[in-house]
Image 1 (cartoon, rainbow, N blue to C red):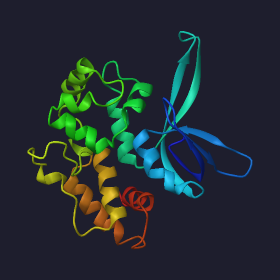
Image 2 (cartoon, rainbow, N blue to C red):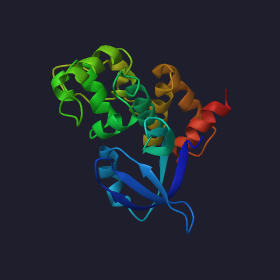
Image 3 (cartoon, rainbow, N blue to C red):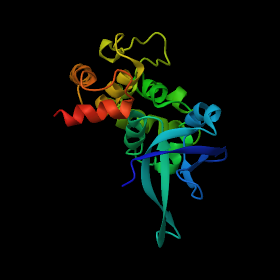
Image 4 (cartoon, rainbow, N blue to C red):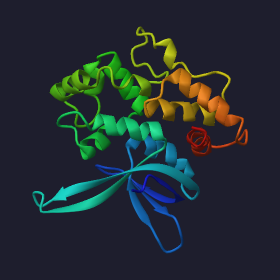
Length: 216
């Protein structure tokens, strides 16, 4: 399964579902569906090489008589993991989840944690009943994605989700990726710190996560 794609970003096309066209080699172009919040982040990077963490799903056609493979891209492993959790909600499939993600996963997760159905209904295709279902089914399952994004300023973020102040940005992202994969944050921070001793101080997140797994 294709889980990561590094290629030159040629263009971004906005519509009901935003798409990015990437060229891994001359003469080849790959269309990747991306959430709107990521499109905003990637727009200044058109013409440069980027890395997307991908999720492949089969889109049903003709009442299930045929299927078309669709590739969805995310900026981090943690964001991809949030999407996979988000789509476990009854009535929220891959396309609806993708259209709804006009805000980063940390923002959506924070709304779920604070049981803010009104905030969720501001997302495309999320009505009141769906928002209530999301809260009911994902409460207790998305805390690891919230980071320090708080929709309700009166709701304090649990201390366990405050980013480690001494780690470089790539290492902080690596910690978030490990937490998204089920690791306890304290353990994730310790493993990342140990991995940093075996890698270049300027290593990217993929290298750091790889070093963590290599050391197990």
